[in-house]
Length: 380
Figure (cartoon, rainbow, N blue to C red):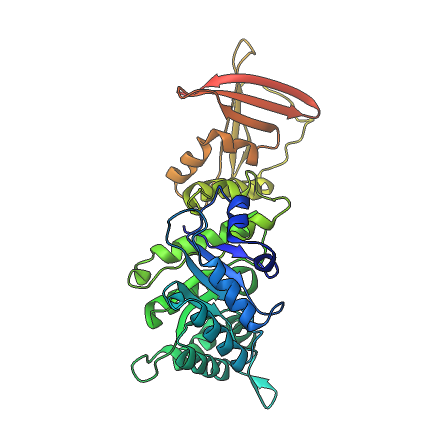
């Protein structure tokens, strides 16, 4: 999954492309989002954008997008466009869009998505630069009480007839942390399937877990059949570089390649360990005072859970078997269970499981009530 880099306000004014390259030399993003408006004049923002348009790590294609967060009036937004064009006549070829360039549009002190998009289309018609919706979608969702049917009805009135009503919207920027996972995916499908508008999934300075779920949604959306004919943009989960620590271990950043791509397959496998951990409350609590038997016994048997244990005649071998229904296929369960390094995520006693060679030799580290124990095993 492609990820865009992020240049915050103030950073682009105090840093240079060469400095940024040194700071992020391990990741060569092919798309950068630059926060504009708020600290500088539209002219200074435009000149900084042009300066950042230079390739950061050698001869590679670099795309840019700007994010004004509704900071400009129409005159300021158009000044930004004109100054950028004057500084670099080819800027339009690498500028994907501007996120929410215009202030919140209110008529009689009441905001509506229709008034906002009409103003944005006016900006597009004059400035010839596409825009993306971000905060406007969140406001629309709130106004519609997050009811997808009502949200879709308003958006269809604006974007459903491209022949008779052309528009300049290049993308819906969707933030699951603000509007929810399900609604984000519904809006992505609507944008792709009915409007031929791209969907860009973005974070709100989430933790690694939030970034992971956002990345998974973005990958599902990009690979869906309804998105096959829509242009794809890099997604906005590049805020991991601003985290002082991470709730995900290994960190989200470790799943991002040097080319700025998230390994979603590995990430989803790691996340599933967390999901299994949430199932621990389904396991029964055994009474430690119950008598121990050396024959096969059933500790608990029901439609939901079955556990059995048996002891060998020598007393040295104890076999425990547990079965319970899982909300996924046996193939998925097997693949997760045999991913040994992930076992420490859902077993509270295990500190780590590490592969020592390619032949399946592993080292296990156990910690139970302060007692530490290690052993090696070989998978067959």
